[in-house]
Length: 302
Image 1 (tube, rainbow, N blue to C red):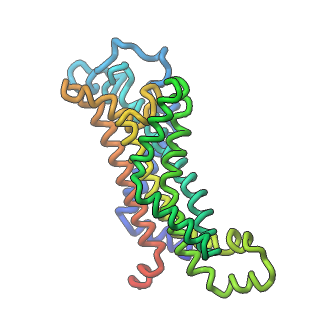
Image 2: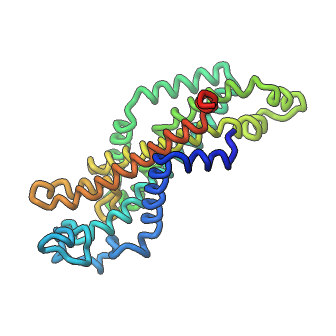
Image 3: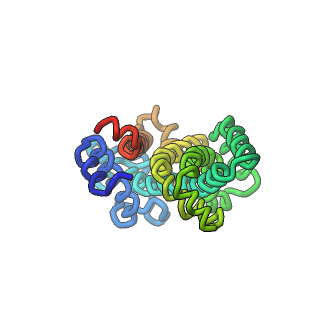
């Protein structure tokens, strides 16, 4: 395991990692501090006026200094909706990865340590799920949920449903990663020693093997956050994600798409730019973590 000082040194010596890290930090702070920094609360109907709808950015003719990036069709400031929407996208991405991690790590540990028919059954189950498109499964599940409940109930539980659907659909990636690490770890002497002294399998798996498999889990988690955000954006663009009154970046892009050819390009363009930058920064950080934490790659550099 790389030491913390070596990790920081590697980070500070890599301009791409620094750039991606700073971008992520800015976006996360922007999302967390949105209630304090945003010029407008886009969820507060008392602050909205239809007279402010489709205003261009403040530097263009007809713009207003109150709305630096313009407004959408409901009179919401695009900058404010981006700040709040980024927070919702990050919440769904992180929540989905937590669900993936809990399911995938548990089943991967069990499959790798127990072996036999348990391993075969869980890995065949993972194969079946990997053969199905995550987006297709999410579309079916969310379409059924929308059909079963009215719009108000869907709006209240949309975030929870998106987290659960994306998380459950993507658990095999964590399970396969953890299982491959467990297969290598369970043959080592410290595991044999734990068995000899009579520790139960549960304690060996969670207390001894799991801590030594967390490096690949950390790497895949970063990449999976980006993938979960992309899936949520796709679902929202199709009208199966976040409702219009609580927009994520994906639903913001969708809400402005019908106006892009009428001249109100800013409604879609700016959320799309933020989404692309967020996904790119997460993927770059994931790639950098993979290179730094992979012992084989480190030995090749030494």
